[in-house]
Length: 99
Image (cartoon, rainbow, N blue to C red; front, side, top):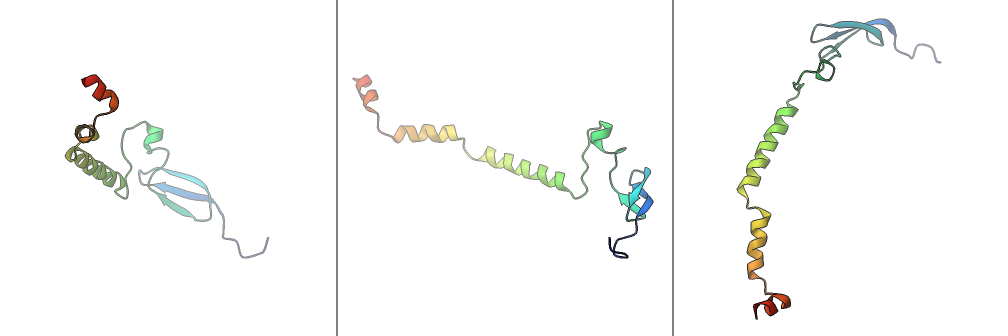
C-alpha cells in the first residue's frame, strides 16, 4: 500500500440515528448521522408505517388515484367489443343458423 493516500480509519466511529439510538462501528468518518436504524425501521419493529423522506409514497398514491379516476371515466373494453360486434357481418355459420 502507498503511504498517505488512504483516509484515516476510526475504529470507534459513532452512528447516530434520528430516533435517538447510537451505536459504535468502524468507519472513515468519526460521526455519521442516519435517518433509520434497526431499532426504528418498520421491517425490524413490525410496525405498519411508511418511511417517506422524499415524498415518494405520497407521489405514488396520488398517481394511483389519478389512474383509478381515468379508468373509471373511460368505457370498459367489453362494452367496446360488444359495439364492434354489431357492425360486423355475420359468419356463414350464423347465416345458416338463421335459416
